[in-house]
Amino acid sequence: MTERKKITKKVRRSGRYASNDARMVRIRTESHGLGIFKTLIVFLAIALQLGILATLYFRFLFAFRWYMVVSLVLSLISCLHVLSSNRNGQSKAVWIFFLLVGFTVGYIVYYVSDVRVFFGRAKKRYARIFSETEKYKAEKSHIECDKSTALSMNFLESAGDFGAYDGTDVEYFPSGASFYDDVLERIERAEKFVFIEYFIIADGVLLNRFLDVLERKAAEGVDVRMMYDDLGSNRTLRRKTKKRIVRSGIKLTGFNRLTPRFTVAMNFRDHRKIVVVDGKTAYTGGSNLADEYINEKRMYGYWKDTGLRLDGKAVDVFTLMFLRQWEYVTKEKPDYEKYLGLYTPTENTSAVVPYADGLDYKEPIGKGVYESMIASARERIWIMTPYFVPDDTITDLLAEKARAGVDVRLILPAIADKPYVYAVSRDNAERLIPYGVKVYTMDNSFVHSKLLLTENNVVVGSINMDLRSFYQQFECAVFTNDPKAVAQVADDFAVTFGDCTLLDGSGKYKFIKRIIAGVLRIFAPLM
Image (tube, rainbow, N blue to C red; front, side, top):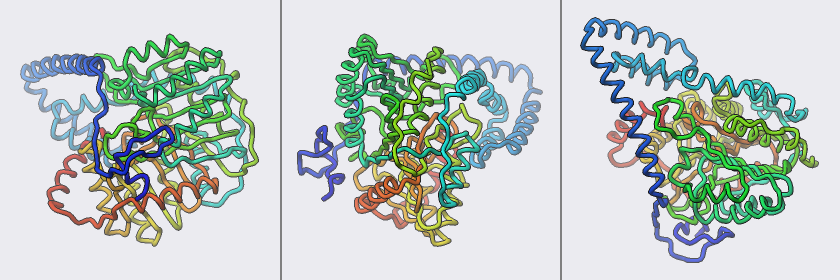
């Protein structure tokens, strides 16, 4: 029996287990009363605002009956605008459905939800920050590589100005426990600064381990900064812990504060996972800073996650990524030069391309990288993802590749953390089985890894294969053709396949499940 199948064993700091009991146990994340109260107040305030708006709207509607005709005309015009827009096909279908069914109010929702309306000022601020810090970007490397690697590198260069770097060593970690052991070991050696950015930072064993080290480092004069997403960490990071962090000399800030005000911008979240130590080492991956990611807590069986470490020239990209986000959130301009150019180049000649995605970029970069890798693959396409809710472009590409004889495999969780998203993910995946795609579920486990592996390249990062990650969240990842990293990820896939069940697309109530998934798919852009 593999380590991963022993899903109820208590994980020590080394990541190993202490019991042979293999029963599945589900333990919910501890909730804090203050976080629940804050969330309740925020949603009640937003509901009240929406109620007032709805009341005023319907009073107006009944006072002017002719408005029904005007609304229908405006909704039809909006449908034409949707069809001519650059939105993905699935979003277009959802919006047209909404505009026609709820025509009396649909066009209003459509226009006020436009990014340019609720996030316009923010995009201008990002543009200013990017323009002012362009001079701090590390000089890119010219790297000779195969055609498939070059296609993805060219896309990253064109879409986001993300260049390839040599002189960078890459190390892959197949579990959250091994990943965080390494992170903490490097932080222990920190002399200048430690930057931490996570979607979720949660009270618990792992955070206490971090704070024990970070507080000591802050006392030694190391510049320690932590950034969390306010919605992602709302019910997990207590105010008491925040005060402890600030008192210790650690700089702490939250992205996009959760406020009792109706705004579509609240839907845009910072989903990045970044740790930078002294400008020499950087980490990213799927793991948040919470106990379930090291299997200290049992929520949905064994929690499968992964991570990546960079040492060398490419680290500067993550440093700059963090500092830009820090400046945007705090409105404080850091001394960029102080934190850049501190890396020690290695002898590695492989291409390493760290990249970001989000509303600070014009194109959905994460989606584009996945598409370019899938389109250029000739031998294999192995994917590990917690959610599989892409648009038709990716599903069509996977089907075509499988029919052409490429080894296409997809690993999903066997246990759902969000049943409604899981229903759509399973349905989307099982629709690919007739084309030759092999779909697996990891037994008694929740897969949270975000991996795409081809014969020569791999991506590891925070980007889920769903529409939220592609269009509504700030994300990050690393694309590389490093042979060592490719081999390590391939070995992890090989081990994980042994812990999985291969689906054949059959099952009870398949027709009913397909109908339910079809209805839920309408809300896919919000999942």
